[in-house]
Image (cartoon, rainbow, N blue to C red):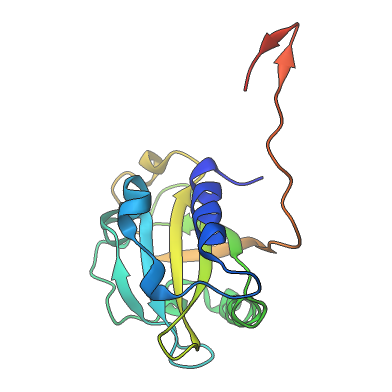
Length: 179
């Protein structure tokens, strides 16, 4: 189970996905997930290992304290994690499935902060899978960074979504409905 915001964007992407077909970039309407837009980004793919930022929301840019347009997304990650991330993105692209990376944000002089990074493959007009819609979702208090820019991300766990996802269940405690 992922953070509810991560789940929300996965569900949005899944609704766009036609049977056996990866959603087209042109079908993505940011208004459909407006509360998440500051945490979202769009990557291009110029080849294996070349994933330039096309767009980044305010939260993403603020976290790194710079405009990321044109920067290769792999450059934000620890050198030791780049090959694993590249291979995972290429597998996501080939398989047409979402990818969630549980990661740590590293900044100078402060404790790390956990984050889920979501990558959703998208097709271009020519049918090529050449874009990723992404999401930065902190899973710990971002205030622990004390305004320091993220200088590096590291991988804790890589997780592709395999098969159908379980539905939500009604939960009760002592006869009281909780969800």
